[in-house]
Length: 223
Image 1 (cartoon, helix red, strand yellow):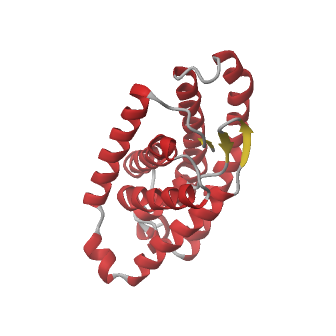
Image 2 (cartoon, one colour; image 1 turned 90 degrees about the horizontal axis):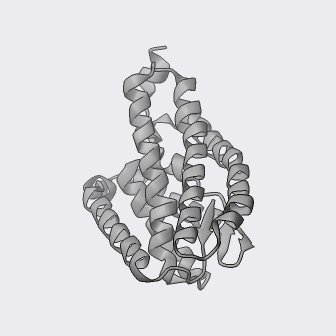
């Protein structure tokens, strides 16, 4: 998805993003099941592997405009597997590693954290809970709504959030954003949905116990 990779933010917006990311990331660290993580080696490997996978995935990117790059994020699958808290913690670590390794701009670290991590993780968790409470316990409903649809929606919301941020900070005029950037956003919805959907379907079939929000007994055994 679209992310910022140059020093574009300043003033009030810069401090808002920093405070918001610090508060939410700290709360995620507070909520994370550290005791379980300490004794569960499988969960440790899952978290470590997820962080490494995100670093590799986010490294595959292309710059579309000055200071703006586009890449897949994979946050929907990660949030459904690890849950809201661990997903934010692992993704935050991955973002710090890739920013350090690529000599990227730390000025936009919090903004990228809020837009590309906290936003899609929160949206994915909310939708998965709504699906669990409101829709029938069906394997394909969970897969297509929580996987494909949710990932596509998250990609759209991330892109629009970046667009609004660019516009508010007078980095690009809205006409340019509407004609060029939003067009690219629309084109990223399907690949993001496909990536997360494929990952989630494979995990649901072979390792359903990995998904914190998925009840294999209700969605598979009882059908």
